[in-house]
Structure formats: structure tokens, C-alpha cells
Length: 365
Image (cartoon, rainbow, N blue to C red; front, side, top):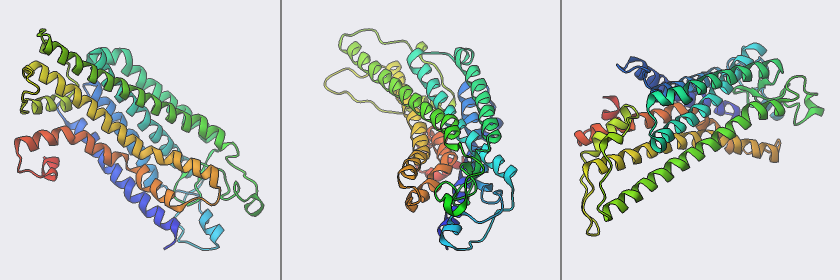
């Protein structure tokens, strides 16, 4: 089996896992009693819908490309099974779904980190976050996604990738960029690098910077609060009241219930923390950990795009196949990883109440 066929199978399999994961999350949110009543749930819903769009693009990508041989076939003078039965319009639809979904997942991960930051650092209520940040964020993301779709379609920047797996910002016909003397001059997507960089790469990179900054500020706040708590203990100051604790949705509330089961011991001769202090400490740590896990998923998924871009720019047609395989394994996998993060607090709670339950059993409950 040649390399391009292997990549297609990997892409469809991982994208299908991601589609199932994001669909489950969306269904859970819509069918739960709370629905989309709080910002956290709406942000996760937006993240899931973005991933569903991207996953659908990857699943149907090999089939909706314009009919014709892939770049791998032309270079290797082979005739692989041709899965494509689409045209330029279906290719553009696939490319728009992938880019809109991909940028959407980055943007919503960033806004989710901002939400956690507002909860931890500024004790912002859900209503305040909705009025000051959330509504503007949803509108900005929607307008930018429309702008991305229009620009990439109007400029003919979306074309089949060389492996015949999906459509993205790429020149056409296949091979025209690397070997114009053999495949002819590019007739579509001549400025794909400009538009792809401006509307895909740079926004994704800026979102990643914002994600890292938000996570750093959350970490700094958590460490600072714990240090202040220790100093208050040493000086016999009155601990903070539990009324200052804010809720961040079912996940954090579940973690608070878990924290009540923890046993804290004396250390260094100091008095044990009060119930209120333990609650604040565990909830802040859980918020940081949950944000960190969402960020790790984002990094695991997107880093291969930049690694591939760098090696493609350096290596040209001598592009390492193993990097292509890594991209097709991890990039479409975001939804499958996100559902593990989303369900983690509930699974922890169930398994603490029922130690004999396996992870899988707790997941299905």
C-alpha cells in the first residue's frame, strides 16, 4: 500500500474519533438540565462545534477533491486508487470547513483560558464575564470566520493537498510549486502563502500566545494565593470566607465535592488548613489543571502544523514522510482528546465514591 493511501486511512480514522468525541460533548451539553446557561458550557459548545466542522472536512476530504491523480502519483509514476469524485467547489467547501473549524478551536481554547483567568484572578461572576467578554468574543470569532471563508474562496487559495487527502491553502495544479517545469505554472492559489499566513497561521499563532499568557497568569495567581494562605496561617490571621468562592460550572463544583473527601495532615508543626481554605486551594488548583489540560490538547493537535510548515519550507520536495504521518495522526484528533478532559472531573468524583469502578465504567455513567 503506497504512502498516500495510508495517510488517507489515518486521517479518516482519527477525524472520525474526533467527530464522535465532539458530538458526544455537544449532545451532553444540549440535553443536560442546565443546557447552555453558563459561559463555560457555551465556550465548550463552541469549541466542540468548531471541531465537528474540522472533523467533517477531514472525513470527507479524500472523496470531495477534484478528480485526478495526486502529487504522490505523478512524482512516483504510479496509479493509486482514486477516491475523489468532487470538483473545485466541493474542494473549497472542504477547505473552508477545515480552516474555519481549526481557527475556531484555537480561538475558543483561548477564550476558555481567559474565562478561567477571570474566575481565578478577578473573581468575575458568570454574568459579568458574559457582559464584558463572552458576547464580544462570539461575535468577533463569527465575523472573522466569515472573513476567512470569503477571502480564501474568492482568491482561489483553497486547492487539493499533494497527498490527495484534503483541500487547504495550496497552489494548483498539484506539483506546480515544486516542479513548475514538469507540472506547469500555478493557475490557482498563486498567493496562497500570503493569504494562508494572514488568515490562518498568524491568527492561530496569536491565539497560542494568548493561551500561554493566560495560563501563566492563572498559575501565578494560584501560587500567590497559596503563599498568602501559608503566611496567614503563620501569623494567625483570619482565613478568607467561603463566600468569596465562585462557581465555574459542574466540573469545578464536582471537584469541590471531591476536595471534601481529601484528608489533610499536619506538616512542619503548622495547624491544618480550615475547611474554607482547603476548598479555595483545591478549587483553584483544579481550575488551573483543567485549563492546562485543554491547552495541552491544543498544543498536541496544532504543533504538527507548524513543524510541517517549517520542514516543508526547508526541505521542499524532500519532505520527511514520518512528519506527514504524525500530522495526520494528531491534527484531526482534538475532539477525542477534549472529551477526555471534559469528563475528567466527573470521572474522578465517581471513582472516589466507587473505588471499584474502572475508568471506562465511570466514563459511561
